[in-house]
Length: 394
Image 1 (cartoon, helix red, strand yellow):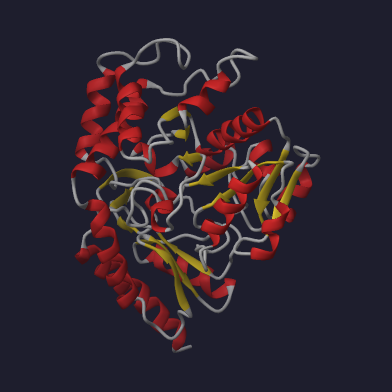
Image 2 (cartoon, rainbow, N blue to C red):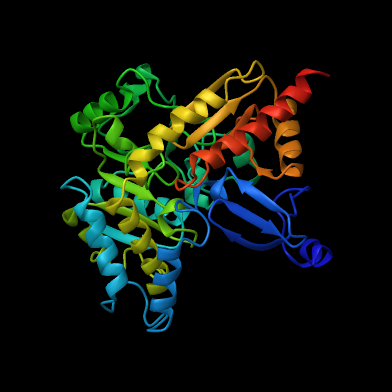
């Protein structure tokens, strides 16, 4: 299997972790040798309720026995997709009431960018330095990391960077700007949070210039930061909200949400302004609906902030310079990328799954399932601390 993995399946890096998976349940992944691995990454924040959550699995099985794909998005009335969009609207501010379901976060970004240009009649898009919104051409055009973009240029024109938390750059938002797109909490950059009411100031400037504010909650959304969506921490509401990752309980999905009035612009002039074959797939929508129901009907989201406190307490170590992030979207920062990689790989051998962040090499990603228990947090932090102690003694 390992030989075939390298021979037939395209790789994204020269050295994949290449763990051969048998099964996964709750907070653990099991390899084909029978070894279990405590998952502190959750599929890069995708498995919100852990692996094979009973409610999600039941929803998938029930829907799979009714019907799978029947028609392209938006033509037939399919209960899982309708109920998912309705439940989202019931848990979002009033202006965020209409959702377009797609297949991934980056596809949702593409739709949001198109919608902003269509709604404003403008072309300029502003984005943040060190931003990551996905890897399709439009999403790369608003990626704030030139080294990763250069090999694929030219990209979409009229996209320009600003500094996240940079108040001086607010004046770059003008009456020529269709939208500014920001991650509510910057992910690849190192789990950077907005400071000094930055998002409120962006919101104000957007209102002054008729610019749309797009917030990317692909990673912090669906309870990961202790609110259903991270923007709730910061006292503002976006014009377009983008989501993905943890939305599907482990299945591939994305969405962008706006007002009914704005979203209706994709229906006409031209018709089919945004289309997708498999967006809103009934099986995946059923999994996402079950995930959202579990989050809104229990106290899992509220528990996230208490689990953050426990993690921060257990992660006090001389080799950890700081812990960034909020809720269960955390990054333990060490002195160098070399130390981070050594820790991540050593923990892998000891049965703890950790991972890197995209742009910040000194970060150790800690984004476990929201359902992780306190005992499992203590178990994982014990392994991590033991590895750090062994490095410290050298």
